[in-house]
Length: 113
Image (tube, rainbow, N blue to C red):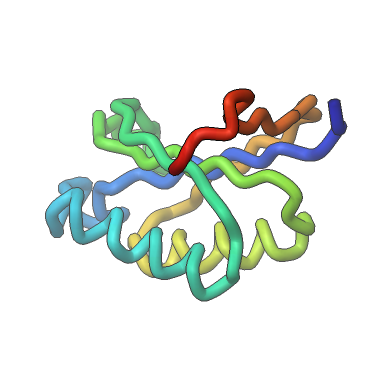
């Protein structure tokens, strides 16, 4: 089992100024997929719900995309997070780094895919 760094980037979908979601969730998902494609990184993404306190103290509940990336240089993670922050018009995005143990398991029967 290999050890690697796992990064999770949390990106809210509410606009930083209006505190409301301006576009469909599918549109944000499409942008996120295009960003990952342009950086040539494999990814997993989940749609979750969360809450956020803005710098002005106001609180909003919003849909959030949780993007998980493995085996990516931290400098690339920072670039991706910065792009998503700008494209989604966020005050900030949250990046969590953790150590992960990974292994890949293939089809033991060798069946067709």
